[in-house]
Image (tube, rainbow, N blue to C red; front, top):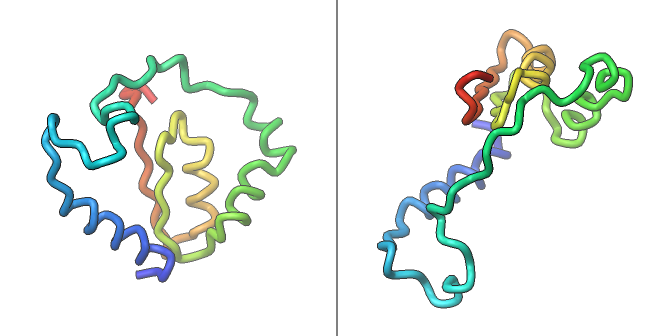
Length: 107
């Protein structure tokens, strides 16, 4: 497991121990929206021309800043039509793994 995934795994384990009912909120949380609030409607998953994004090196810059390298396992959350998914797959290579998902079932 990559060392970068250890804090994420620890956070998930710690959150799993939280057991607050809808009426029991921790002190200080009363002013925050409840977790079950509705999300915004999907307005579409086509953003712009992929070639324009590639010309600006958008994906390469993001992956460089995130430290994405060959052999890693990464997730593309909110993948839409997969602009980053295919570029992540190229970056992590045959020994890497890309998990992609989106709330829009048509994406």
